[in-house]
View 1 (cartoon, rainbow, N blue to C red):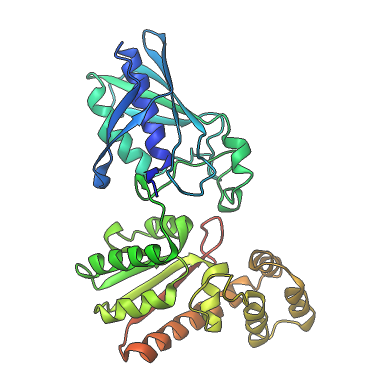
View 2 (view 1 turned 90 degrees about the vertical axis):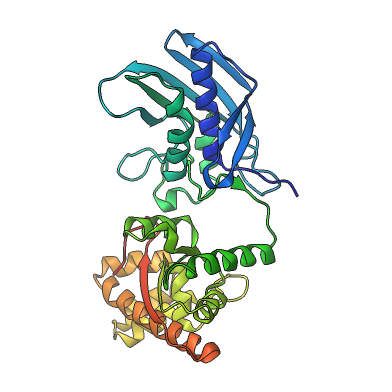
Length: 345
């Protein structure tokens, strides 16, 4: 199976080709420093100089043999070189098809910014700033087929990724990859943060946790908890979307919906425990998703009460799960967020 690159790599490759075009050094491919992933080379579909200070280039996304909606989509980079006396060497902007977050900021995350700094700044003369606008002509349409809007990314796709390389992995390979990452980080720290998905990763970073502490679990929370205990980890913070992690409150430690999905039942039990009105409990039971229940609880001003109970239950269940399989004591903390990355307790 063929590996590929994540979307930020193609965006920065296009930007580099656009700068080359301005410098009258056009190329059909560009080499990139891919940070911890080594180096790579990306083909450029087209590049052109617009005027003496402005260039445009296009790269085509190739994530390898992954089921990725962005496969084959073009990423344009419009670059204008401007005189500057300030310290800002690169300005990254969202053009058509690149989303924005709820506060209006471009959905351009740390990997893309790090790649830009390493690969583009060395190309710029002194006192020159590169204003770079990324355009994804198909981005707005593709975004409608993703959950981006639910995570607060509006009007397009995001330049998001934790690695430059996009690797096709089997289910077993993915779990082993997470276990290897855990072993590496547990060797240097006894305080680990487990997160589920890009949303959980972003929340953990916003809370100030270091990358050296962050370990992805995907659906294998239980297996990773046991592994951490056996590695001598003494503190684990669970960070993630409430609709996933609340399953732990019901004793479900593989959060895949293909295996078990009792989220509404767990929320009903929490509502009963917290003595919510019977008519409200009935309404909770009738709703299709945890997100819908959360909105209902917010409307009735009892969301914090319910999610505080669930947070405590998750912590207690996770602690008991570890003791059951390892006889070891670990301090567990739980942080739940909604799909927009806002803390719910």
